[in-house]
Amino acid sequence: MSFTSKTKDEIISLKFNKAEEISFASAIIKNIGVIDGNFKVMTENELLARLVYNFLKNNYNKDIKITVRRGYNFHKNYLYILEINKKIEDIIDDFGFKSGKIKEFLIDDMALKRAYLAGLFMATGSINDPSTARYHLEFIINGADYAVNVQYLLNEFNLNSKILKRDNKYMIYVKEAEKIADFLRIISATKSLLYYEDVRVYRESKNLANRLNNCEQANVDKTIMAASDLINEINYLKANNTFELLDDKVRIVAEYRLKYEEASLQELSEIISSEMQSKITKSGVSHRLNKVKEFATRMHKFDKN
Image 1 (cartoon, rainbow, N blue to C red):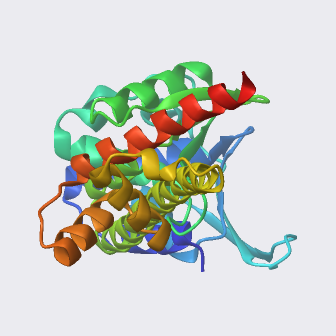
Image 2 (spheres, one colour):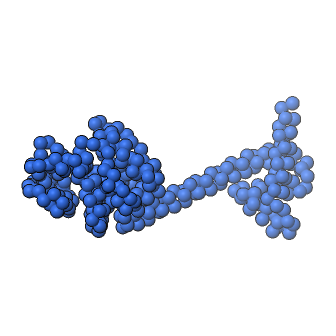
Image 3 (cartoon, rainbow, N blue to C red):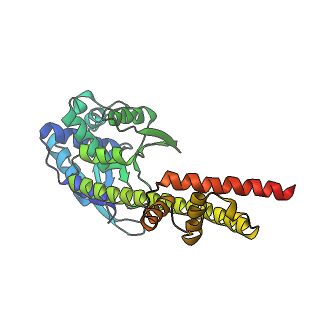
């Protein structure tokens, strides 16, 4: 089962008060209801079909025809069709099928807005499993005006949602991991939120560890390369019998560089301090090795002349 399906199963089991239930169901019916002479709602989710049926029956006292048929998709899930063919004007008006504006009484306070967004997700939302390569939450919306209203509602919760036109529909999406987690918190999908955050934290910790390892490896490679260049210079001075011209303290550090080729400057300072019984800092080692490089550079120029 996909992460989206698991989240929707959790949402549909939530308990709402009467006003919240109206907002929740209204968002669902607005987005999956169809008007074509009569009124239809089609869904593969049995629990969702039952919820819509009970809501319409309790609030509109309509004769609702129910049809169940085998779907034509790959999984061949059952398709539940709810149909009303008499006096549907009040349904058209209440759920704003001819308007892109969300009815004010449906989103009159924060609790109602949360319930409406939960219903919106049930009807037309999807969310990537956080274990996949990218974080993505989206809603597919009919109508430009309604899409703008939904985006505005989402962004009242600082979710930074964006709109993208897709064929004759509009996709409202959120890409930031923290914002998607906030959305799950807003719609009270607690189990999904805990799973999402666990996976997200694990992924980000793993990515941080990889970045640190890469950085550490880059520093090691840089140290080895610098040491290799310096060792070549020291060997050059020895081959040309000019190594002994170096100052004694500089020459001692150069010998340790040859002896411990892969040691960092800090490690060299600790080794020399221990073996020579004389404290030398990392900067002291660096200073003396720079003296070696400067002297070798002068010798190269001398050889060219």
